[in-house]
Length: 98
Image (tube, rainbow, N blue to C red; front, side, top):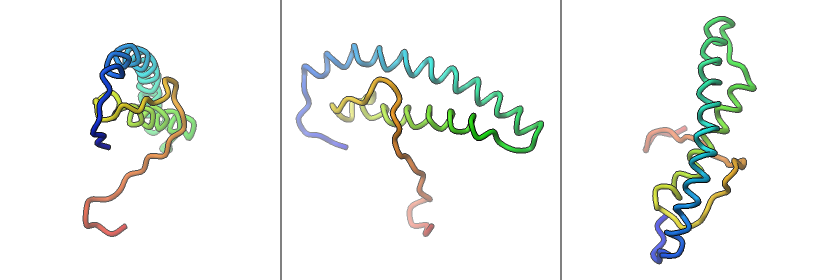
């Protein structure tokens, strides 16, 4: 998502925004990590995945990918600070028909 003009003011605002996103992502990631650990035991003991844990972990991954382009200086378009529902999907390797 290459955008030719880059706002200098946005670069300064971005520092404060990074702190807010960082706090939310850190807390969300910490909880998602605990959920992943619990999910591992659920799979080990019961032989199946917990839907609630899977949805929560997926939500964290979606949030992380959603804010990644802003954090990586790829765009000036600010994402929401709190997690929002986004659609992310995985495609097979290039050239592979799905």
